[in-house]
Image (cartoon, rainbow, N blue to C red; front, side):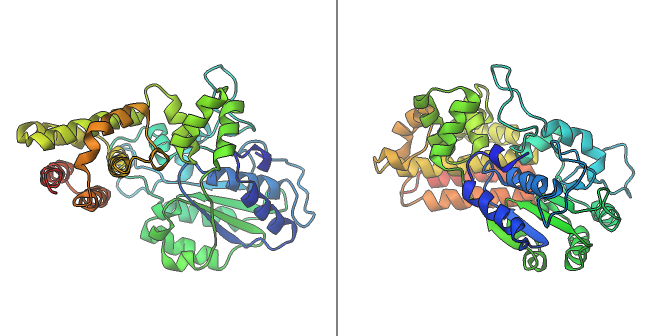
Length: 386
């Protein structure tokens, strides 16, 4: 994958390329930013640039194609399968086939490749959990992966040049893994580059954060998103403009908006049902609602709550009657025409805190039925507050 294959992000791409050309690239860097902005695309493009001999004149005979290169190593969160014993620590190689399938170019509705290049770098944790066929597990990076990475990176590179380690979602490392990775980053093997790709860097050990150079990747610019939707998805400009505005710089959100059966429509139904039932104070139906949501996987539950946070913000902003401040689909906007007045200065912060607390509790493996039933009861109080 080349820098030219990335959707937007020209400024960041040029910055990384310049650092590599000038020999000022740090041995460990972290690309941070929201989902769908292109962090992984930048990471793979930088790895491609380095492994193809564009640094210090070190040319390689084996050119990168896609993600296949003997000196390119990927680390990512994994789950524990039932067939493994309790002592086994999963490693990325256990799921390498699923990883390759996820990062393969995705077909467009017209049967053509979705985007340029020979790799698909645009995916979310939810996509990865689905690829692993995870049910209700939490995906983590184990100490077994750290041991495996240390073993690989301390060996001589296959091509006699650089070795690149791309660590996706390093905040998912457990404590044992993080401590071993810290030592590896502090004393890196010769000609080894670590590229971390993080969406929640604040959850990473401070000692690791202090030893990597951080690069903040902004959401994709509106014009770049419109151009990509027209070129890669075949949209007319008016449709591309609408989708780009809803996506807010997130390529994954743009693709979801194009998908008639996207997850947000399911979440919208859950949100509407909850708001109607809490207004009616229908405890029996609220209990059923909580049980239904509790049956989801934990990652899906967190995405649902994140959607609720967004809809609360949009409903509140709708009251100001300034269309440029809201980012909703036609269906969401139609609902807010009657609902928005129930989200006001007296309860908007309460709703946001309620959903954020639930996200935290679910992330800490709290009992989902209790979390969501408690949420419904508190929401019933908030919806009737002034």
